[in-house]
Image (tube, rainbow, N blue to C red; front, side, top):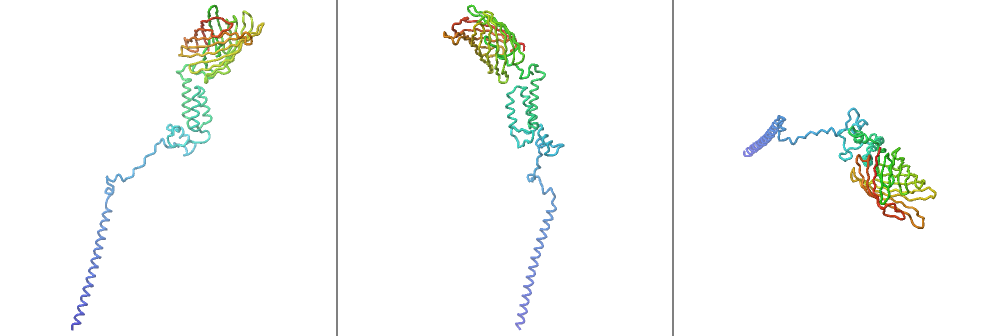
Length: 396
């Protein structure tokens, strides 16, 4: 009787346990569905947010700023031309805001090809042309552009040429400034007792009054047929007496750029008392060192009389142009003869000094005054000292 009752109780407890397990599974399923429903509602809320909620004022730093525009001056101007074509390169090269290649700013490449130059060649031309006279510099730049017609510095060069031309032929400049450099006068200092070495058209008159009884007068006219060649004629009282003296001056070198002159002097003279004919060839060279004009000359004086003789003549001079109207000079004159005579050389060498004045425009009129003293004499004693004066008027 007990066994059937125990069996009934066991079956009943098993059924209750199965029901509890099923209820527990149902509860877990309900919790899972509830959690998924809440997540779905959250996602729906996120989708419903507008753009203003996504980008508020505090998030401006997160935005990417737009790129700046390139400057127009840095762009290759290719209007009306295909990029990379010759027209585009010329437009870039002639732009008013071109990159300064000489300064080294930027990374721009200079166009290369036929007729183009480099910064080095342009710098070399600048240095060389700076030493030239204005008209010579214009010619030099013209030749540079002929050699480099596509120069990267063409505009600069053309501006330089225009500036030089304005300086040479501008309306505010006197006409004489436009004289070609090959025709400009050197205006070398005139000496008193030595021979003139600068061929120019001029009229000269002078005197020398020596103690005790020496008196020298000189009048001479010189006419320049060209800048380098002239003839002259005059009368002069030399140590041998009065003489008529025609001659020529031929400047083998006469440069305003180097300030140098080299002249061949071909003088003749007809002595009146005693009468004889003479030749006086000399070679002279001079140079201007800033305000200082220095020269040296030397030659022979051949006396073609009953007895042929010769003298060694020459000297040197230096003139300092203190201002445009005043200058100071010093010169020495050599006069020697009979080098082969057993009694010794005849000599009468003098030292002269004085001042020059330019009362008008320099290079047009000149007044010289000074004194001369013998410092080496032997057998000859023409005077013991003399006063000198000279006036020159130039017609060129």
